[in-house]
Image (cartoon, rainbow, N blue to C red; front, side, top):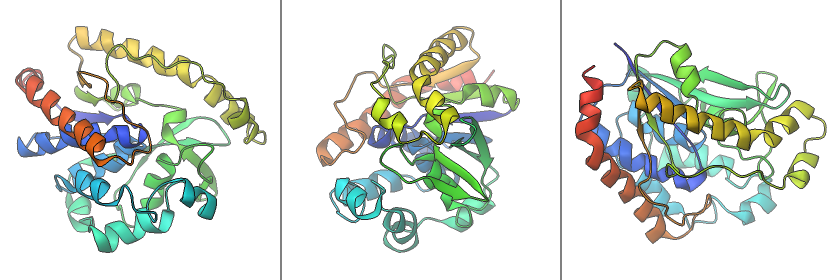
Length: 280
């Protein structure tokens, strides 16, 4: 029996996942693979490297740092998240990421990206995080506020556009036990957005435009599918028990901490059921 973690994104809303995973690390829950999307990948990376509390630490420390994230960076660099600071200076110098522990870990790490030219999701297994950090950046590069990330002659953006919750991929890969961490409460359904301005930015990429336009429909379908899978005991889902008013780009430390602590609380409230699920 093999266990896979599926981690939804959502910008700073994803700090909920950090709270869940930090408690899972305390309980030493064995995971065979992680499939992360956007912020979910950026949080999940710390599970593989066994660095609890790192994600909440640096997000609290730098959420108001102009070098990190915000519209000033968008105007200055074309990316709402500063590439050099967030993906290089921060993990290499300011809050060091343990690349060696990541590389030695037996947990497989799949990063979900959206191919801008095909409009399809790709799931990249990243064995060396330092060498392939650009896949994590691509997965979390939000359309409209990020430049397209080019890797090996392919063009990528936010993995959530094509596959926000890659539970189907986990099933295709043959994992018997799947733990899904969502960042929205059970009643949430994505509404169709007014995306004409956003879509016009990608007129050279009609398949990507189509993926953006149909994102809400596909998201809501997979949420309904997860609920069915839960009832059949095929997956175990941890999701926010309440809605915290947190923005994708959140600057309020109190709100970030509230979302993180909700993740910890929700995990502790359901962990006995999780243990039973993992015994199957």
